[in-house]
Image (cartoon, rainbow, N blue to C red):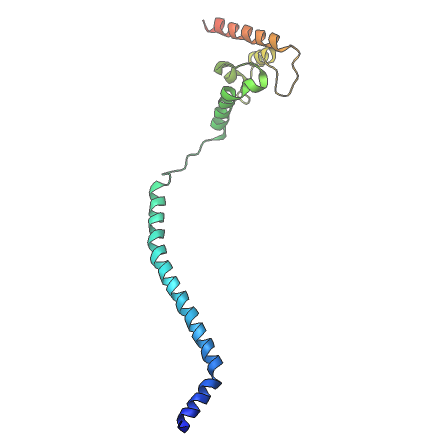
Length: 147
């Protein structure tokens, strides 16, 4: 071996650790850049498609209602779906509109609701059979008033 070859070998052996670290860093950096490019190639068109789809299918305008309309709707919904669970009788929509709170309850509305249907959470003085009879009487009175 010539002296030049021996010197190169010694330098290579001396810097072998540094060269391995540089090669490892270069390999990690290249793999990161390749992953970034592939992710951008897939993500950008996909993101644009999703954005356009959401813009086309979002509601055109928000619908706002005032609290009075909501209260009226909720009272009617409650009467139609849940009032018979608590009162033991079925209310007609006319009775519900008369008994709806916040709409200026009159004496007639309070009398009609206190006779036939107990309030929520209050114990009924009449047994269930009598309360259904009272409700039937109230309905009969309402039908006579309408006719």
